[in-house]
Image 1 (cartoon, rainbow, N blue to C red):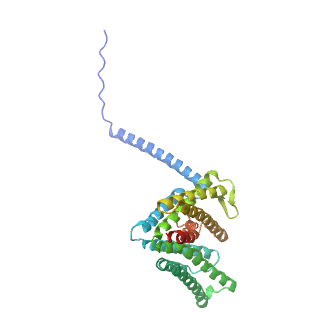
Image 2 (cartoon, rainbow, N blue to C red):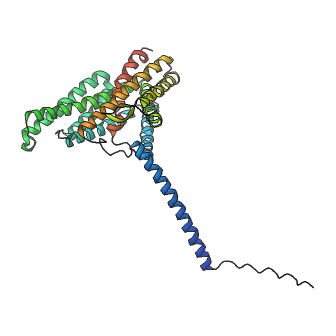
Image 3 (cartoon, rainbow, N blue to C red):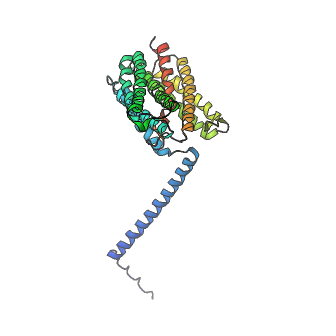
Length: 329
C-alpha cells in the first residue's frame, strides 16, 4: 500500500536578512558589470586616443555644440546679425590664445589689445564689407603696434633689443592678418545679400573635407604627406578629403545654393586644397612654437586656432567664389 504524497510545504516570504542579502548580491553584480563595461569603454577610448591623439567623444561633443550655435546664427530668418556674436567670440578667443602661445615662445605681444582689436573688426567687416575689413584690420595692426611701443616707453621691464621689438611687432601684426583678416571674409560674406548660405555651404564643405581626410587617412593612410610638418597626414587622407569635398560641394551647390554642379566641383576642390594648406600652416606654427595644441580650451580639439586652421584661409576663397558666381547670379 503506497503512502500518500506529502503536502507541499508552504513558501514563506524571505526574511529581512535574506532580502538584504539578495539586494547586496544584485548590487554587487550590477557594480561588477558596470566596472567591466567602463573598463571596456576606457580601453576603446585609449585605443582611439593612441591612434588619433584626441579624445574623440569630447571632440564630437564640442563640435556638435559649436555647430549648433553656428547654424542658429545663420538659418534663423532676419537674425543673421547673430553671426556677429558668433564670429566675435571665435575670433576673439583665437586671437587671445594665439597671442598667449606666442608669448610663451618669447614674443611680447599685448594679449588684451590684440583681442579687443580683433573683436572690433568683426562688426565693421559685417556692415561695411571688404572696405570695412581692410580699414579695420589696418587699424587693428596699428593699435596693437602702438600699444607695444607705448609699453616700451612707460615700462622699463618691457624694454628689449631692436630686433626683438621688430619680432614682437611682426607677431602682433601676424595675428591680426592671419586670424582677424582671414576670418573677416566670412563676416563680409555673411553680411552680403544671400551670403549667409554661401558661408554655411563653404564651412560645411571644409568640415566634410576634414572628416574625409581623417576617415580615409585613418583607414587607408600609408604614405606620409608632409612628415616633417605634420606626421599624421597622408596622401591617402588628402585624396579622400578631395573626394569628400567634391561630393559635398556638388550637393550643396545644387540643393542649397541653386548653382550648377560644376560650381560645387570647383568649390570643393579649391576649399579642400586651401583647407589642407591652412592645416599645414597651423602645424608649422605649432612646430615653431614647440606645442602640440595652441591651447586646451576645447577638450578633444585643443584650442580655437586648432579648429579654425582649415577654415581661416578658406574664407577668402569662399568670398571670391561668391563674387564670381553667387553675386552675379
